[in-house]
Every structure is written in C-alpha cells, then in structure tokens.
Amino acid sequence: MIRGVNRNSPDAAAAYDQAAVLARLVGARMAERLDYMKISPQRIADIGCATGDGIRALQARYGKAQTLAIDISLPMLHGVRAHSSRPTRLLNRIFNRGPQLINANARALPLADNTLDFVWSNLMLHWLDDPLPALREMHRVMATGGLVMFATLGPDSLLELRSAMEKIGAGDTARRFLDMHDIGDMLVAAGFADPVMDMEIVNFTYRHPRQFLADQRHLGVRDAFLGQQSFRTWRKVFSAWPRNHEGHWPLRFEIVYGHAWKPAPRPPKIPQARTADGHAIIKLHPS
Image 1 (tube, rainbow, N blue to C red):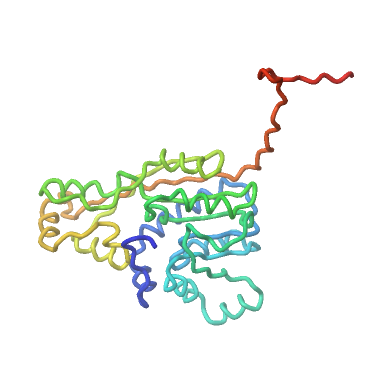
Image 2: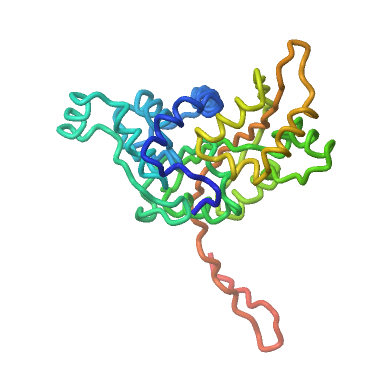
C-alpha cells in the first residue's frame, strides 16, 4: 500500500475529479511533450491512472493502441468507467476499444515481461517511499525500445508551507520529495537508458489555506501529503503563512518530468581463455 493515501471510499472518484487541478495541468504538459516523440505504440499503460484523464488523452492520440488503465484504487478505476457514456462503454466492449481496467500495485504489475510499448505515469511515483521497485517493474513489462514518461513532485514543493511550519516551531511533517537527479539515477539502476529529466515550478494561490487542505482531502492524500497536525497547529501555520499582494496564500509545486527508453539487452560477455598464470590467450586465425 501507499501509506497515508486514502482513495478507496465509494465517492473517492467524484471528490478526486473536483480537486485534481494540478494533475490535469501536469498531464496536459506531459501530452505536449509527446509531440516530440516519434513513437507508434501498440500497447500502452497509464500506471496510477486515477479517473482516467491520461489514458483518454493517450487513446485520442494513439487510436489503434491497446490501452491499460492501472490503479491501486478500485473506486478510481470505477471513475475511469464512469467517464464513458453507456453507449460508448457498450461499443468499447464490442470492438475491444476501451481501456482495460487493472487493479494493481505499481510495484507488482500483473503483466508479462516485454509486453508494453509505452508507460505513462502522472504524479504517482512520489507517493512511493522508494520508487525504484516500481521503475524496475515498468522496465520488466516494457518491450525493447519502449518509452516510459512520468511526472512527479520535486523537493521545492510546499516551500511556503514548510517555512510557516518552521516559523512557529511546528515539526515539518509534510512529505519530502526526491531530487530529479536521484530519480534519473534510479532510471539507470532500473535498466533504462538515455534518461532525460527537467523541472518547472507551478505556482498556485488559495483564497484560504483551508481550501488547500480541502483539496488534499478530496484527493485522498491529505495525511500522506502533510502529516498529522492538530487543528490548533494548523491555525498557527495559517497565521504564519505569508499572503501575496492580493491577500491570497501562495504555494509552489516543483514538477519533475522524466522519460527514458528500454534498450536492447546486452549480449553476455564470453569469458576470455587464460593461461595458468593469468595471461590472456589470443587465438590467431590464418587469413
């Protein structure tokens, strides 16, 4: 399980859709990057698909591809289905066009080796205490030449909130996020090649900090994101959180983008014959 993430209530999908502004924005930015990728995938998976914005965009772009919507939360997968009308769902079943819904953990994908051409993951990896096992799973299920593309939160996220916590002497219980260079190293460790990493800062403003807390609750991640604080502590944090010139509360999110490819496996090294004292034996063949 992804600790502290609660997206399993029956109304989780509807609440998520109301608050998933950042996820939709980041998904659109990821989709723009696909304009520069020369790929024609036959089988695509959106891992951590939530209610399916990503997989619908990928279906529109790669209409002939088989698509898999994968999430650890069943209500999220029900949300994917709910976004299609009943006639559309019927046609999808008849012609096998809609996304196949898979309830699974990103660290244990129920897929065969070498079966996916493209893996997409929008704002999922940062919920894992260690993303490396999930990246290794993505590598395992991906075919040679396949592409993985993802976005995750970086360490400069929530700086204003952390500053307010420090100002009042509260413990910094907000979740910490990995630097993009560390994630790039993990991609290589998982077996991927040619990783490309970059980042941008997205600035949000809230009319009141309670709006931010409500959004995280609707997303089902408030405790995972912010940790446990008493209401009294939150009131002090809100007072120490500086407003902008419009009287709103600013908050930044560092968005880390990455993509990499699965290279062809290297041929096994043939051990070189050596003499008893360790010298290499070189065989010469007549021309």
